[in-house]
Amino acid sequence: MEITFSNRMKDIKGSAIREIFKLAGDPNVISLAGGNPAPELFPAKELAEIASKLLTEQPVLSLQYGVTEGYLPLRQAVMERMHQTEQIGRDFDDIVITSGGQQGIELATKCLVNEGDIVIAEEPSFIGALNAFRSYGAKLIGIPMDADGMNLERLEDVLKTHDNVKLIYTIPTFQNPSAITMSLEKRRALYELAKRYHVFIIEDNPYGELTFNGNKIPTIKSMDTEGWVLYSGSFSKILSPGMRIGFLIGLKDVIAKIVVAKQVSDVHTPMLTQLMTYEYLRNYDIDALIKQMRACYAHRCGVMLDAIKEYFPASVSHTTPGGGLFIWCDMGGDYDTQQVAKMTVKKNVVFVPGATFMVDMDKPCSAFRLNYSTMNDEHIRTGIRYLGEALKEIMANNV
Image (cartoon, helix red, strand yellow):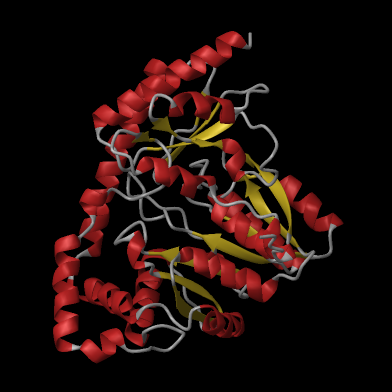
């Protein structure tokens, strides 16, 4: 059967990471891909207790339709926490609960971007966001990353020479995939550019709580005095990605339109998982849980960095994360890590080639992303050893 797909979807490729997940489900495969939180850190016992109590004592509220904006006590609790931990929330701000952070990005794009408009993103960047922008016909322009965040000189050049830029998308803290954190100075300068050129920023911050040393740089949203920043947050990396609880904070008029778009999309985020999140925030110590995660990921990141030093060719560069879930590596030169991936799959080791995170996904890329959050020390070392062998073989043959 010949099927004609819509123009907005026909050229969009599925996430390579989702495809890799299919391999990662094999117990014989060592996955250095993905971005899952460590399953042993899920507060499963507590969430089971909460769910049981809700379904016993509040079955109608838990299972019935709710309002699109989200369960009011949860919205209030999240705003209070964001005000305390991130200094976010002004009189002009409002919040909508979303079905994961991804939905907030997609709905903001739906409301603010017309076909042919320009969306600026860091390069490399999160494939889920890039595909959301592509799905609405946006023209993507990638801004290269420096050690302290996106190159703002290049960004301003684009803003000066294009009059239809609608969004700047950034993950300023422990960026996916690079693990780079934007400096305080660049955050301030980025916000000033957005104000000057009247362009909205989507600040995506799913990893901000996962700082290894507990230190935080102020969010861009905390600097927002006029409403140019939409802040996307999520409980996926803290409580559970399967619960699909995210949120978007921004200018009231923008959030109101996003609520209308969400009504069209999925009516509302499931009430049961909203209530479970609220009850966890109210009755359990989420900061203690976050502290456990920080210690776990700091350890596993250290194990991976030590293994990289031992097994990778010295010419392969890498970032040294201060938090988050990823390490970004680069072979340099004109190598294509898609070829490396084909070799390591034969040894039951998978990772994500860098082209996945680029504006032009068809262009060969010498970089790749590694994830350390879900594996024990032995699997990390074994995976890095096999990957190092593949890197050495390819680099030896290309000399």
